Length: 269
Image (cartoon, rainbow, N blue to C red):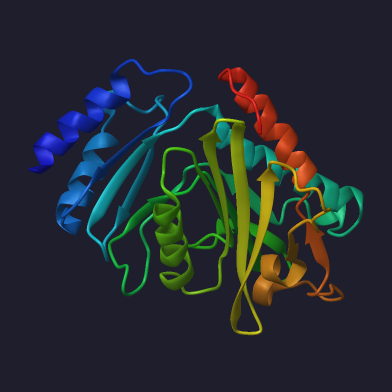
């Protein structure tokens, strides 16, 4: 398809009516980097009046695949989960309250500064966490790193293979290690099922923690966790233990996701 045809299809879908229960995934193959940049910039042109409409743009230059996701509220459970987790880390003094401004959390921020083999890729995640730069003797400054330290992607209509490709892009296309959290939901006759994978590089090896969301397993699962050193990297403040575990409570993820499912008339398995 020509760029103009792709743009027309995307804009029509973004502005058109949609069922509450379904997000929408649009995928276009054989899109060159130049055309992907043209499409991205045109969608962000204020003349198209799309700035208040929710959509997520992704372009994988290594595969020349462009995708657009029009999300449901279920995608928002990831941000709520990370936000509540950060609050619990402060309350339990795993991360001192004085460090509450060390990180910035955002949704669907655009990144373009990827390295080989993903140069000229364009990516928006559902949630990103960035570490603020430390100034000499002045604490953390407002200038942020050029890449996130944590990204979270929620998949509903997106196939699991696409989420895995997203993880490869974040893991292999960035200068510093990035913690990647993938949440996948899917429908079944018994209700909505799901699982989460938290992947990070530890001792130069990729470690993947996979946990079931629904149905809740009969045997208790250990909650996935991050390490304090993964958040701070080489900016770890003096006296902090990089091996401190920062739990991501599955019970809270279930609570947030269950609320979002109820809003679209669905239930968990």
